[in-house]
Image (tube, rainbow, N blue to C red; front, side, top):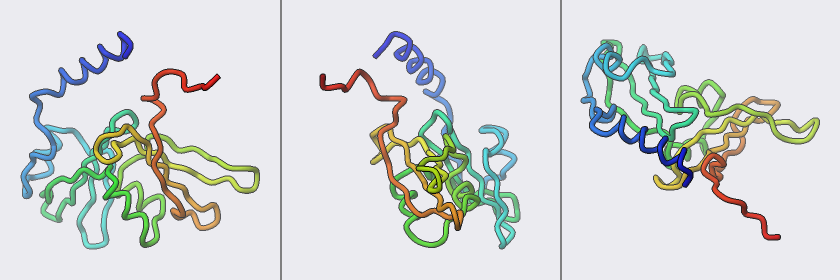
Length: 168
């Protein structure tokens, strides 16, 4: 690990040790109390039933995003970490529009386009810890014609790839 990365990591750890964690917020806490301690959510989406989905995301450089449901009384339901294999597996069923993906997982780390001319697809990348351990990116692909998720898979996070892996 380079001197710079070591000190950057040490600074991040030093600033987070001893700080309150959003997952310790008890269900029923008023949103104003949560926002005072953790700031405004990065994503806030109204639902048809009058509730709201809120996500506090660490993207583009963090691997965590915490979501809750806010009731009509402005109280939170409790928090869950949504950038996980279990959460991403939800993409296997149902119709997932970009808005639904954003409201479930928060903003992506990156939005790009891949493919050959005439076959370009939009890809959203989410930085996360695969199996709770490995620095990874979850790639979420959207079909060009329907603008819905048609594929997703994880790969290593290039930000944490060290060394030169050439075999020459």
